[in-house]
Image 1 (cartoon, rainbow, N blue to C red):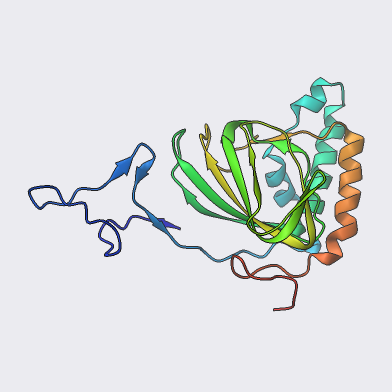
Image 2 (image 1 turned 90 degrees about the vertical axis):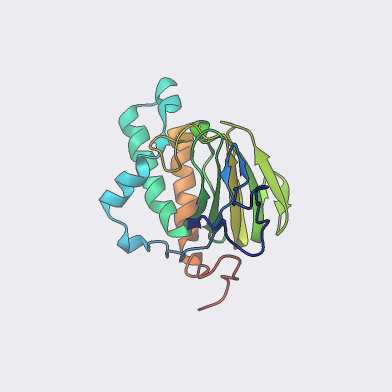
Length: 225
């Protein structure tokens, strides 16, 4: 949750020569304070409805596969099944969002142990800086832990896999053309329907490991709570 707090005692009062208050303001916006909202539990497999899957599906742009000759009905069904398999292993919290092409946004995301993220890009959502805050992830041949991170330029395709204890990351974005959550903002980068189905099988195999998730940002989710 984001709030304006121009009268906070711990920040520069920014008084004008006549004693009146003036706010420092960049092209991205004024001074703001945000606090973390509650973390929503990811849905369990038996709780996932067709409506939820359809909603998740709307985030995807899979036109590259269709343009390559993959039958659209098969692509759509494969992405739906992948979405259903992936939903129990992730949850996210938008922390800050200024909106607009000059604004910045901050999102916290948790992926469960050995969760394999699909190859994708975010063409309308600008550049993104990722910071690992707990757990670990595997990006290519590298393992990244707390304090490590990576930068993804606008529209670049990428994927990674959560480590054996899961991973919590912060996504810091700038230069967005569309608001977070815009339909079609996930460009599907998997090379074929076959690859998507294989990924779905891998996700289903690891669902039993996604029984515990953080109740607070940065909290260890490997034990019962």
